[in-house]
Image 1 (cartoon, one colour):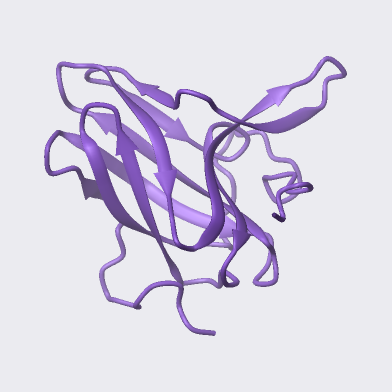
Image 2 (cartoon, rainbow, N blue to C red):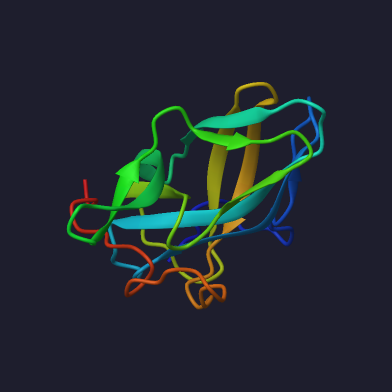
Length: 162
C-alpha cells in the first residue's frame, strides 16, 4: 500500500496559518478499514486572534467529496451525520473541537484505502485566515476521547460511499 501522500518523518500534528494565528492540534484521520470508501478527520482549532473566524470549507485529493459534518439527533432519537452549511465558528481567543460523535471532516469516495501511518493532504479554508494546507496522520487504532459519543467505529458511514 502506498501512502496517500509522500511519506515523511514530519506529520502535521500542528499547523499554523501564515496569515493569522490559527493553530490545529491533536489532528488525526481514520476509516473503518483499508477497504472503506469513507473516512473522517478530527482536530482542535485554536484561534489566537482578537477576531472571530470560521472554517468555511475543506478540500482534499484523498476523496471524491469532502465536507464539514456534524452529528444531529433526529425526531426519533437516532444520531445522523449531516453536512454543515456555513462552516464552524471559532471564537476570538477560543477553540472549536472536531471530534468523534460531533463536528468533523467527512471524506466520501476515498481515492485509496487509508492504512495506519498514512497521511492525508487537506486544505482548510477560513473566512478570515484564508487557506491552510496540512497533512493529517491516519490513526485507525485511536480510541475515542472520554465522553465522546461513539457509534460503532465513530461514524455511521452508510450512504457516504459516493
